[in-house]
Length: 77
Image 1: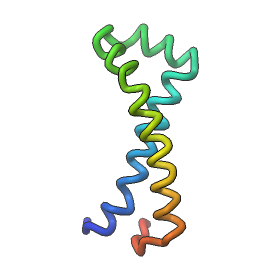
Image 2: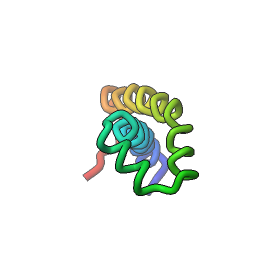
Image 3: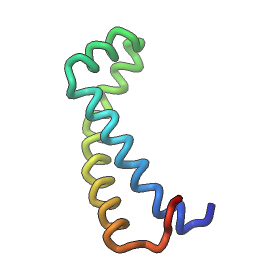
Image 4: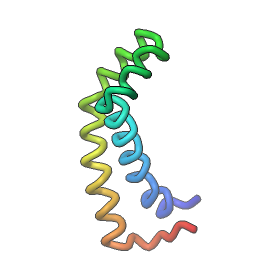
């Protein structure tokens, strides 16, 4: 994996992290399941990352769209 491919893929990881945490914390059934299945320390840490997840969601979305629109030259097959 070269640096151009990594530069193309990384925004999608940021977007995925933001989307995953935001979805888990904003859908009541998933939040209830997380609070029941996770230890209280891990659940509290998940709650503390809510703002970070929202920032990652928006930044990752814009960054991913920029990479797709600009056609950064890396094609993933």
